[in-house]
Image 1: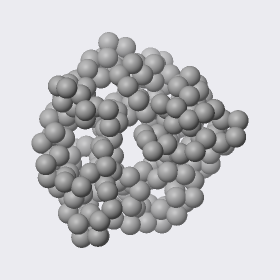
Image 2 (image 1 turned 90 degrees about the vertical axis):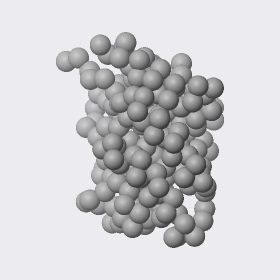
Image 3 (image 1 turned 60 degrees about the horizontal axis):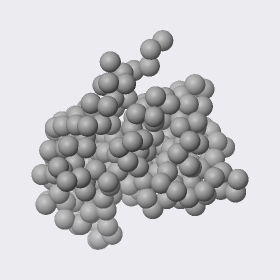
Length: 221
């Protein structure tokens, strides 16, 4: 069976002023096939956080794209987000009662195969390999901290291929630069995550998203 073309998953910088970021987000979403956005927010009081989520949500969700919060599962329902991304098994377990069954519970920080299998057994809706910075600490014997977090890039691709072959929940591979997009897709990722680097592109994030979409289209015609 020919694998389907992966879709994109955008990761924002840590934001305070979401209103000024909304224009860049809208342009990026218009440039490619984006399935989800992971919104990362600096700390603030609850009302401020909810307002920031709603500001980005008005841009993201009108395109039928999922809006996920980086942590903060307790805010997802109140802010109208579609779910949350949890780093580590304990955070995932603690969030399930708040998110399920209506909202998405994604799992990251999975530095070992054992952690990834636990996430699947704990009913994660997806698993992410190669988290955006700040990275989780490496597990003993699981590699070193580098551009792919606790998984060096060759291990990240191997982990994606292993998961895609054996498990049903979707997997996301985090691309720390443009050169990693195609190898992550070809390894078996269902989604390719593009992180903070795209927002610093000279042509704007829309240029990076368009380039990523073209790369995926060439790899999966």
